[in-house]
Image (cartoon, rainbow, N blue to C red):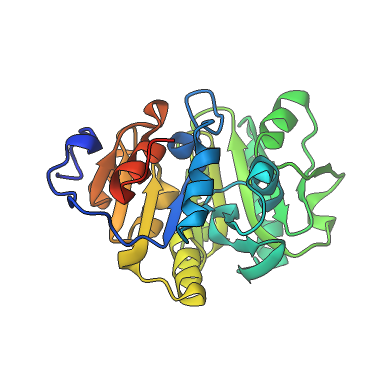
Length: 288
C-alpha cells in the first residue's frame, strides 16, 4: 500500500499473513489513539491485558505532560512507558528513563517572544513545561481551560521567567491558526532548537536533540528491542521522527499529508478505532 493513499488497513495486501514479532507498540494520542470525542477507546483496556500477557509493551507518546498521561492510563496499572512532552521526558513506573532539559535562558526568551506577540494583538499564551509542573502566567478562563486539557499539573504564576524547575519545553497555544503569526515568530529559534507544530493551535520549542523519535530510539536501546519489533502510530508533524524508528510505522488515514508520505502503512482513522484494529490485525489477537 502506498503511504500516500489513506486506504483501509484491513485490505492492505502487503501485510503478512502470519503474526508479526512485535515487542513494543508506541502511539500518539490526539488524532491517533483517542476517538473523535478525545477519549481513550474502551476496547483498549482488555487489549492492554492481552498485550501484557504476550510480553508486548505499550507506550503512549504525546506532547502531553507525564502527569496527564499517567492519570489517563491509571486503569492500566504498572509497567507502561510514557513518552511525554514530545519526547523530552520518558518515564516508566514513576522512574525517569531519559530527559532532555531545555536551558532556562532559552525558555525565558521564548516567553518574552510570546509576550511581544500578545502585545501585538495575537491571541497566544505560553505554557512553561517543567518536570514538577506546567506553568502559565496568562490566567483568563479560556486559555487556562485549553492548557488544562493537556497539563494535569498546572500552576498559574505571576512571571514565567521567575519560575524555578527543570524545564522540558515551552508550548505556545494560539487561538488562531498557529502557522499564521506564532510559528513564524519562532523562526529565530530554529537554527539552534527544535520548533514543532504539534496541532492546529499548538507549537512546541525544545532542544534540537529532542523529539519523539530520539525518545523511541533511546527506549529501544534500553529494552533491547529492534525497529523490526516496533509498531508506531501517528497523525501529525511531531510524529514524523518517531515513524522513522519502526519498520511497522502507521499513519492514520486522517493524518497530515506529510505523515501519510512518511509512514510505511496507513491505518483506519482514529474515529474508527484505527490503532486498536491495526494491533489486533497485525498481531492476530482475538477481538477485544
